[in-house]
Image 1 (cartoon, helix red, strand yellow):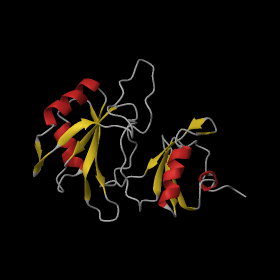
Image 2 (cartoon, one colour):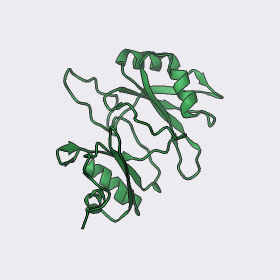
Image 3 (cartoon, one colour):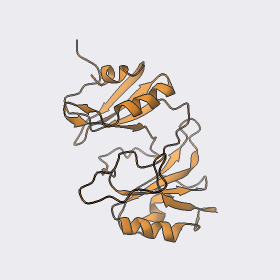
Image 4 (cartoon, helix red, strand yellow):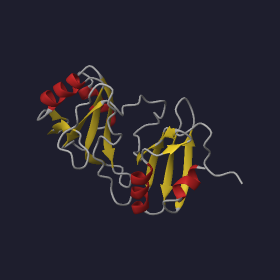
Amino acid sequence: MLHEIFATVGPVAGVKIITGAVNYGFVEFFDPRVAEQAIQDMNGRKIFNYEIRANWAQPSSSVQQTIKEDTTHHFHIFVGDLAPEITNETLAQAFSVFGTMSEAHVMWDPMSGKSRGFGFVAFRDKADAEKAIATMNGEWLGSRPVRCNWATQKGQTAMPVPQPGQQLPYEIVVQQTPAYVTSIYVGNIPPHVSRKLKK
């Protein structure tokens, strides 16, 4: 079913669904432009009353694909000028001193396996995110100083401050994914959706 849904955008190379307390999966396209179009077309669409999320798939540095906390509505900061030796773990360790850190990840180049020189850190509390930016901007992390600021969407200059009851958009961070990436992440999949339509 997921294959059939995403095939409406363009040719699908493969689909994988991970089931558990939260269902999510990955859709692989042959053409990166089609993958980008699928994100634009499908993010926020409803399947059986479930609003799915679609974004670029990001490789993890370890097999820690256990159930992760949903950080969609957390406060995300951008960390740039990362030294090549900085991993998800060292980034998390550096920012965990700011109380409510919920996630830290370095953006990796899936072809070379090397860091792309930037990452994102999420906080449950806005005050902790602000403190992290103020404290860590210009501080040395590994072999070079880092730049810290709010993660922004394309066309935004700063992350919006949520009003009570207001939902923030899912794509809070800028994703500068290379042109050759063809896999996208699909979250919040309904429990009865299968990889392929049963004939």
